[in-house]
Image (cartoon, rainbow, N blue to C red; front, side, top):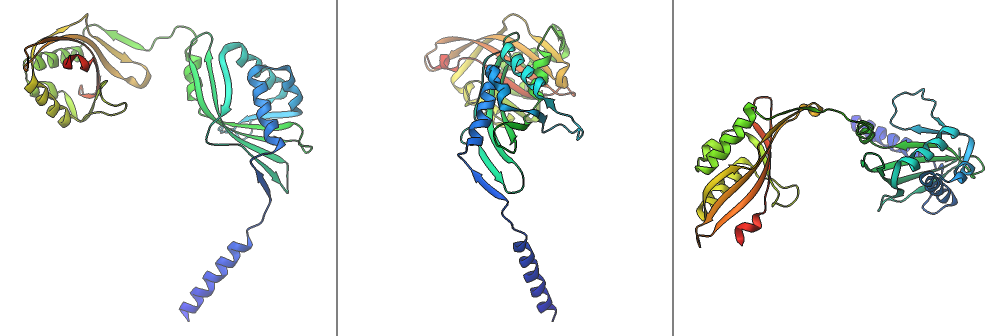
Length: 309
């Protein structure tokens, strides 16, 4: 009996689920509404006076990520002013489809026609050189006649714009030190490399540190253990004659993200064992420290091709 009741319950659930499906319109990948929505944004980036003809008198634009549910939105007049501001303050301004995505027009049986788009917004600030290159998702609701945009809702990450506003005018971002204990750590590591003291080099790294090398494929890095093996292989083929400071290191204690980074420049002189050739390398290192004074990330910049010449 219990099994029968369970089966009947499941059948009833399936029946209810299917009975709840109801068509409320059609979706189009080609539609005059799509042309209207995309034309509206092209007029926006060019600050064309015709933009106003594409907006309803009671037009409103909203930030879809704004947590204020009572936000009044941007009026038609202010939207036109925004268009003029973008055109005045940005070079190379454009809005393009974010391929392979494409826009859809939705004709609702109950309600107005909507268009949803996926785009890339690109521009370069004329004053600061900051580049905007971000994906944007937009929803357009047309008026009942389908001739003008009544509502526009934008979805995009606003973090880049915070950085843009900060780029106007001089701003400090921490303190630069020419003498600091972390600089001393980097100098000691260079001396340890010069004297083939592997323990003296890697003792300053965390176990899960990431070691990047400009000669590796983009985005790839080595673990501490892999770097140790690479160092052993290097010493089998080369003798280090000297590692000398080129200029002087800087320790940067950033306000933003509280990052702690030592930048240093070096001239390394090595001799290839195979033929005795002496090779000079210029090296730039970046070492990121944690609050405990251990290195969590390093990046080495040098021309590895010189070792093969």
